[in-house]
Image (cartoon, rainbow, N blue to C red; front, side, top):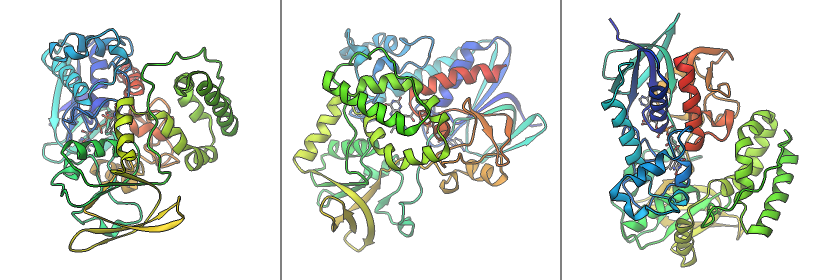
Length: 458
Ligand SMILES: Cc1cc2nc3c(=O)[nH]c(=O)nc-3n(C[C@H](O)[C@H](O)[C@H](O)COP(=O)(O)OP(=O)(O)OC[C@H]3O[C@@H](n4cnc5c(N)ncnc54)[C@H](O)[C@@H]3O)c2cc1C
């Protein structure tokens, strides 16, 4: 007989853990839970398993608590740890601490849950790959790669970011060992040769992580960075700027929102030199605004505004920004805006050809490797995750209209290929990006985890 659980959590990164922790806080009757995870360390997931002390959180300590109803939980945890005493100060909440420290926090939270299971929770962690999910009547059957299938009444997909599997336009070079399609694979920055440049595609937060990893191992050669717009993310202010009383009533018209925000950002920059207050004031409304936009407007946003939004919204801690800017100033990072044209592999390395917008010319560069930092893959037809592949094929899941993740309702109920809600199948986290837009960072995930916990316990 297959073991049967009340709740099955698929994916054990930060989203899966926050959901588990919120369930444990709310549970009032005996409940059995299975969590299945593979690939990345339990609780830490992709983001918080880095061992590099210079990979910092890009969200301030005060906003990184695992719980919406205990917003000082992370701050107090740091204060309780002697090993982090260098961070103990009145301004701790405003700091950007190492992601490794946040991983430690999540890890401890996970272990506190499993060592302190109340009599109401019967928890089982399964280290395995979920390869498919089948539904019959009121039961999900979860097929696993190594172990026997299990059954569940409710299932939550916490499968996180899907790594890309090809370099856009260059699928033929997929198998070259000089091309690192998945930037979160540690091999991408291992065995670096000091004598030749490294070529990075993408100039966002993942590029910044990668450049830091290269420099931290003493890499002195060039880091050539190519992105569509050739701009790195903006910095956070040193200290948080007060958020003005928000009278931003979001109209559901992209043009009006854009001009409204542009004017406000200009005036905020005039007054405080920072755009942060405006973005902070808008953030609580972002999901609502996004859901009210038409598909055409969402597509227009993706084509024309997304790069500006991302540059402002996904900011860097100022010390990280200064570090990267210094590398650009001394020309160790060569930053180009343009488009990749071709990559040729020869005995000595790669010849990369790209169009450079600024000089309006084609440039050729030699490099030892390419690291793809353009971000996760949202189009499920292009990912290599057996669960996603099989569920897509069976029609139990479908891409949202923009192919950024799952088709689902705003509160995380999965919608199948036929456009129907799949009863008792849910998701939280970055898979909801197409539906909510703002759905990848802890401040959003913890809200979803809190609400989803209530839903799966109902
Ligand atoms: C490099 C990086 C830095 C970030 N920094 C910050 C930050 O500073 N602050 C912030 O708020 N947010 C940050 N984020 C956002 C981040 O996405 C979330 O904070 C959070 O880590 C997402 O967790 P997750 O569990 O949804 O996804 P993941 O961490 O991707 O975890 C998903 C887990 O599910 C597993 N899984 C997937 N499919 C299967 C399957 N079929 N079978 C079994 N297991 C499966 C995966 O292997 C993985 O272990 C960062 C993201 C990245 C990538």
